[in-house]
Image (cartoon, rainbow, N blue to C red):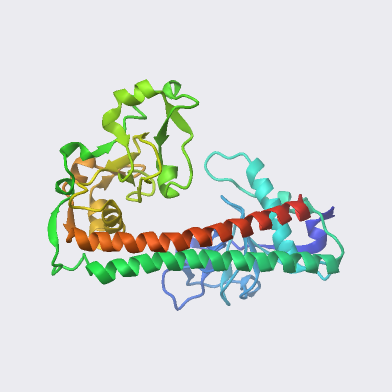
Amino acid sequence: MTKLTDLCDIQYGYAFDSGAFTDDESYPQLVRIRDVKRGYSETYYNGEYPEEYVLSAGDLLIGMDGEFNIARWKVDGALLNQRVCKIIVKDNADEEFLRFALSKALKAIEDRTSFATVKHLSAKELNKLEIPVPPYEEQKKISEILHRLEKVIDIRQNELASLDELIKARFVELFGDMADSQCKWDKCKLIDACADSNDIKCGPFGTQLGKDEYTDSGVEVWEIPQINSEFKTMPTHFVTKEKAQNLEQYSIRPGDIAMSRKGNVGRCAVFPESFEEGIIHSDVLRIRVDGSRVAPEFMMRQLHYSGDIQHQIELVSSGAIMAGINVTKLKDICVYVPPKTLQDEFVSFVKQVDKSKVAVKKALDETQTLFDSLMQEYFG
């Protein structure tokens, strides 16, 4: 094991005057913690600054609050702000090897760091950090292997993003801009696109049911994390079949649209055909459209893609601490209902693209598994 300070110098950021922060792009970018991972900033600095805190593209930075990310900066001339530090590698270490080794070590520190609201990484913790370091040539070999896998992961992720954009482009091609006042499709309230007034419903959990009423197995309780993953992750809470029967009005079944009421407000996903009926949590809103007039997949995409509808959802969201959708007001937002045949054409296209996404996702998962396995082998 070798001390980090024997492998690199650590330059800590400068306490720039927040009064000189600006959104004027004619000034230098200022690196804030939230910017480290993405590699660029949308905050600029209109003031005097020491030249030694000017960064170059490719510099290796660590965010010292929240998630302890390490990443390469992408922009020349940005300013190294406080609570961000720069890693300057010495001649006995390979910079890419150190980046991978530190990403593993920082995650371990993050996992064991206690916090009240935000986790903090101290200079003392960094200075005493030790990592396993083989000879230089072996460092190079390891970093090249991991870098190649990292590139493949990026390619697969970009492929998935491109397929999502393809679906969005097809939606616009078929239905046009639904934010346009000249949109030709029939228009109605969201509740009128459902068969019944109870088809827009939020669950009873959080107030009506206590934690002691959950069980280890039984009928699944579907919550926000499952919506955010588009139902790729499974529930962690359950209720008995008897209780689920008593809560039938809060059920969710294949074809229902689930919407996040809090946090990532308005995020939607269609409940998969292969799943059994479950129960929704109070943070989840269920929309059950009239299948004879509206395809769930089409309506879900309309709720996501239409800037006009997103604006309407924002208007019916409120909360002093965390935004939450007002269900009564949501029922009255306006949506469009094109001919069902056109909706079905779009849904068929989505199904074809989804087949490609499954193949890409499988390749991504396999590469990610190999990458994680090698990270564990090299760095413990």
